[in-house]
Amino acid sequence: MKAAPEAPDAEAVNRRLQALLPADVLLLGEQHDAPAHQQLQRAVVLALAARGTLAALALEMADRNTSTAGLPPQATEEQVRAALKWREAGWPWGAYGPAVMAAVQAGVPVIGANLPAGEMKDAMKNIALDGHLKLDKWQKQQEIIREGHCGLLPPSQIVPMTRIQTARDAAMAQTIVGALEPGKTVLLIAGNGHVDRELGVPTHLGREVRSASLVLRPDRPSDTGVDMTPADAVWLTAAPPPKDYCAELRQQMAPGR
Image (cartoon, rainbow, N blue to C red; front, side):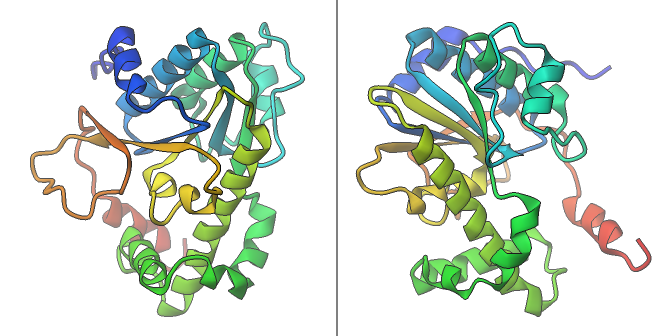
């Protein structure tokens, strides 16, 4: 049986958070299949809630305009999942539920921040999104999309997929701004690419919004440190077992599937 990741030390998390606060927004990036990252997310929620400074927990894992705001701290997991219209197929509740429930039990609203699937088709055609980033950053985002799909996307799909990424970042930023409270911090949990200071959600936040970007990254000896996600801080964690993501994607994209 695989051992569970060691629970984060609450005092150490608090101490490391201090370097990033105060902030109106804390953007917490993760690798989606790294259990140590989800454990740290819960620890950060608990730390901010204990300070009384957590305004809201915003999630990439739920669509914009979903919220637990009407639920009491004693709400059940089933009630919370229903309020967020949780999609288990994409986001296993076992991984994210502990952080979500920690916020709910602290009386903090949890809000969906992602672009709904029904809006993605329009985003793919929205040429106005092409001008959000400077040309070199826009090209870099396209390259990240290309590499993230292991070079398997047809060239004609690169720009539309990059527009979706930009639209998702914009949706998350708009959700965050709507949840701001003076003297408190909105915490966003999202993939590391979305918290990129040069390409992601921070580029959609106004200068008047004080934001801090924190990347969680598995510590692998082979990593060179080159081309890592630009952020205000990086916390290294235990690496999950090696996985051939490209082999999985090739299988998913194979004809007939």
